[in-house]
Amino acid sequence: MPRVLSIGLVLCSIVTQVGCLGPVTSREYKSSDVPTEFLLGSEDQIEINVWKNPDLSRVTLIRPDGYVSMPIIGDVQAAGLTAEALAAQITERLKGYIQNPSVSVNVKELNSYAVFVLGEVTKPGKYQLKSYVTVLQAISMAGGFTNYASKNRLQVVRVIESPGHKRQEIHIPLRYDDLVSGRGEPGNIVLTSGDTVVVP
Image 1 (spheres, rainbow, N blue to C red):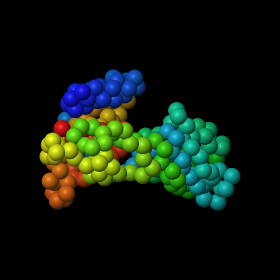
Image 2: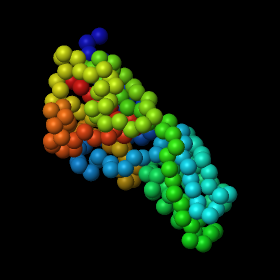
Image 3: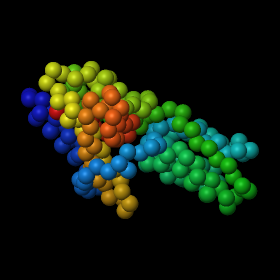
């Protein structure tokens, strides 16, 4: 099967799977689409520390529905938040029960993180990872470019959830020469879970 057709079929498959979660629209890339912090996901193991309250502190997995269970306050949405945002949410919920709560959240183990590398690379496919990777690292894990790769026409395909729970697919154009030289924007970005690096 030609590589171009293969890319198209896999991308269609990814979009179809994402579409099961709701309608997906496309729009142009904006610099704000590159997050500066990492987002938690289902099956990630996190450590929740409530200062001076060991009975409330715990190491737990984020459930498949995206929530964690806490004593007193019950279920708390975790998936899609940064560790800092989750700590703030738990802190706010605890204010009705303990005085001046202080909460921290640390990621112990990444289980939700996976990226795709497609097109003119030696080993295209899905990569389930235990730590965050950049675009260049993902390409390296995929065995590097083939002889036919258009290195300066890279794209990262990302699906994000905007306010109102509307899902949008964005395409982030990248040039390999800029990535290795450190020039240009957005640079050698850290991939978020579900990102697809496309090498035409």
